[in-house]
Image 1 (cartoon, rainbow, N blue to C red):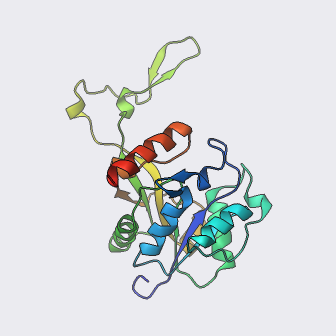
Image 2: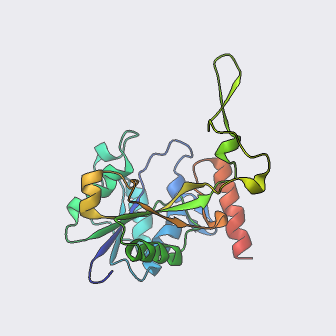
Length: 229
């Protein structure tokens, strides 16, 4: 709980995936990918209940075998490419009333820890914000990125003149996909974790990998091996 308010964690894991087939249950570091997130949620001191929302019987069985709760099976209309994470999260909140906060934990972030989760929640409440998302510093600075025009020429993403030295660049951050937190009534109204009121929780780049492709998976496997060497 947070000051007497209840916290629900939702781990979304549909059966089909576009980038990497069945990625949520592929073995990595000695266990299925989703288990890393199940264990991180279980280790949180602030989450009151964590569930897996899935439409897939095999994922549900693996999740249950590793201690996850599956209070319902997700409907097929929320397991399509068009369904959004917000739809899935709000569906879980509607099915499980009585919570004040919701935390979205995507299973594609295996290196996010229970300490990261609790620090992000504490940061959100300490700043009296309705929402918090995890970020990491960008490697490719937007000042040095370009659009390629139809005629093949380059146009800078940022119109202002870019500093010539990297050390003169202002820091920029990107969502890393690991942690999304919001007050449930606020999320129901906004239908988005990102708003001018949302605060950022910075995570180290080594724990910020978000698995979407086979190369992402290989990098994550290498990082896990290094951490447990």
